[in-house]
Amino acid sequence: MENFGALALDAATSQGATYADARVMDIRQRYLSTKDGKTAQVRESESLGLGVRVIVDGAWGFASTDDLSRQGILAAGLKAVEIARASALAKRQDVQLAPEAKTVDQWEGPCRIDPFLIPVSGCLDLMLKIDAELRRVKNITLAEVAMDFHRIDQLFVSSNGSEIRQIKNQTGAGFVATSFDGTEIQRRSYPNSFGGQYQTKGYELIEELDLLGNAPRIAEEAAALHACDQCPAGERDIILGSSQVGLQIHESIGHPIELDRVLGTEANFAGMSFLTLDQLGTLKYASDIVNVVADATPAHGPGLGTFAYDDEGVPANNTPIITAGLFTGYLTSRETAAAIGQERSNGSMRAEGWNRIPLIRMTNVSLLPGQGKLEDLIADTDDGIYMETNRSWSIDDRRYNFQFGTEIGWEIKNGKRVRMLKNPSYGGITTEFWNSCDAICGPEEWTLWGTPNCGKGQPMQTMGTGHGASPTRFRKVQVGVAYSK
Image (tube, rainbow, N blue to C red):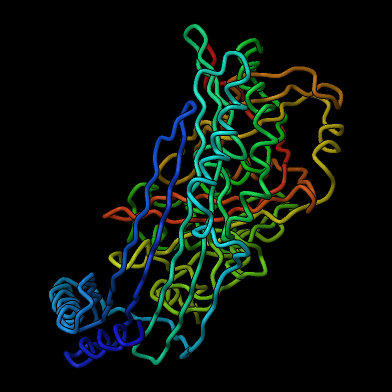
C-alpha cells in the first residue's frame, strides 16, 4: 500500500500539484439474508483501488484506479492533475485549506471476534433459527433476517508527509416480522428498522444483540398491532425510544450542520440547511437540557462514525454541536473550515470507497444522556404516547419541517402504559420540537445506534453514521396526522 500511495503523490506533485493526497483502500463485504425459512442472499465481495486528490492552479482534481501497476497509478495521478487544470478555468477563487500537521500513525478499531472467520453455515444456522421463531407466531406472514460484515483497510498519504493506516470492522444484523391481515400490513423490527443495529465491532455484536431471544416478543407485537386502536390525532406529550431519537438527530441536526450544505456546495438527496452562518452561537436550537456532540473519537464508543483520522488526515474530534440548547458547531472539512475563518477542520471528511472523493459526513452525532430510566419517565408522564422504532420519515430540503412514523406506540395515562397503538406518527418544526424537550433518560438507557446507508453526493455515496441517544420526552407535539381520516 505504501508504495502505491507514494507513487500517486509523486505523479501529482511532479506535474505541478501544490497539494496532493491519496487513499489506498481494500474493502471486503459479506452479506447474508434469509426469508421465510430459506436462504435468500449470500454475497461476498472485495474491492481494492486507489484515489488521488490534487490542487493545481487553485482548483481540485480527483481520479481513481483499480489498476495498481506503476503505469496505472501514474495515469491516475496525471488524470487528477488534468482535471484540476480544467476545473481552474471555471473557479471563482483559489481553494484554501485550514492547516494540518504531518501525522504518521496506525489504528485498528475494536474487533474481538473476526466476523469473516465465522463460517457462513454457522451464521445461516442462527438466522434460520430466528426465522423459525418469528414464523412460529400465528399471523406472521413474512420473516426476514440479515447479517452484514465489512472490513476496511485503508492507507492515507499526503504531500505534507502524512502516512496513516487504519483498519476498521463493521458488523450489522437485524430481523423483521411482517403480518398481513385484510388490507393492513404491520411489522416489527429488531433491534432497529431498516437493517437492524450496526457498530464498529466484530461478530461479538451479534452475540450481544440476543436476536434469537427477542424473536418471539417482536413477532407477537407485529401480530397484535392489527387489533390495536389507531394512534389518536391531536397535541400530546411524546416519549421517543432511543433508536427513533437517533433518526431524529440524524435528519434534523446531523444533516443541517454539514457545512458544505450551509455554504451551498452540496444539495443532493438531503438538500441544503436552515443553519446559516449568522446562527452559529446565537440560535436557541433546543431546550437548556439538550447537549449534542459530533464525536468520532474511539472514547465515544464503537459507532459507525468512529475512527482515528478522517480522509484528510485530520485527527478524530469531539465537537460541541448544541450546548445547553445553543447552536455551537458545524461539521467541517479543511476547505470549509478555512472558508469561515476557523483555524482547523474538525475532521468530518470521509469517502465511501477508493473511487469516490471525500465529502463532509456525519461522524457520531449524539444526544448526551440525562438521568433516570425509561419506566421512570413513563411514570412521570400524565397523558402521552411512547413511540418506538422508525417506520417512515419525511423532512424538507432545508431540514426544518418534518414528519415521522414509528412501528408501534403505547398510550400513557397517569404514569402507566394503558394500551398499544398502531400507526403512530408525529410532526413539527425542527427548532420548536427540540425546544420542547424536557426530559432525557440516563446513561443506562443510552445506545449508540448505527445508520449504515446515509446517502449524499452525486454520484451518490453511502456512509455509516452513529447516533447515541436515550429515550427522550417532548411536550405538546402534533401526533397522529399521518394516518388520520
